[in-house]
Length: 373
Image (tube, rainbow, N blue to C red; front, side, top):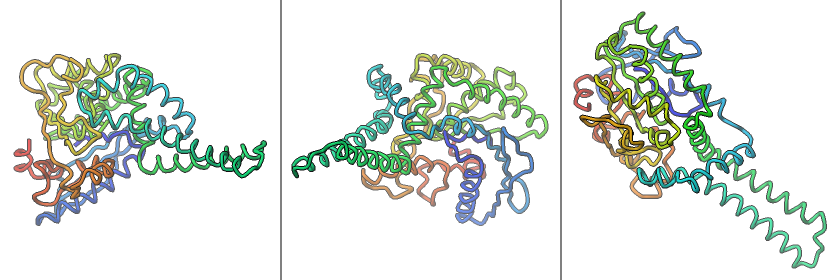
């Protein structure tokens, strides 16, 4: 399995721990015992792990690195994000972005507006609080002078600082950074990722020559799904289809391909999609959920941008229920757990709660995995 994470600066170590924990939970469902070991081969482009059963290798996991690019586009300064937010929401609200995305998924459209709404509420609340202080001082019969206004400014600054820390803790800042990165990629302001994809394609072909795999799964989670599509297209441009000989499979989990595809300027990504739609196609399974507001649930990436995809449906879209895995039964419970729920695709489910797809079952139990496909 070749794995591409979403826009996440936590890197390979976080996902290694996540995979190891989920393997332990998966093996509790039966009598099979697995362990995850790091392989010695690791460099700036990838990390490799191996799933062992009774000491025998069952699955190689190749974590492809683009988390360093995420960190490069992880501005720490609130004022920088405010500037970027003004640019983005000018397009989103006035340039038709929210309407385009809303036609595909009102849930994703609302999530796109969420960071801006949070910022407006935080600023409005701070202004109201500072104004109340100034008004109270004036009613008390004290002259405001320079000191009164200074206190009001201090209260506003403390309020906004607390709002920033809250936004960072509950994922609002992460969400906007991801949105802004995708926006820049669509407008060709960000070229580092395209260069990285070319390097990754070359590296994977080198590994394939050294270590011939029975099957090669390209798995993309969240925004890693469009990196997966870019990588698959780059492999095809390099003539890898005959060498891979029908062994390549694509799997997108909680994808947001349309976040990039809806931009008219994203011509490079549209070309990638068009290339993947040409015959012979590689099998592509897309797993999403209406419970996950951060993905385009059941949305055909080709229909989202008008790229022609003749013939049979591609990719194969499958909707699964995710909320039941975490016993989220109310709207508020669902809304307040969105960021954690978005990672549920990478977890194993209790028996009877998978909703028809379990990643570890898909990869490690061939019979059940084939049934899921």
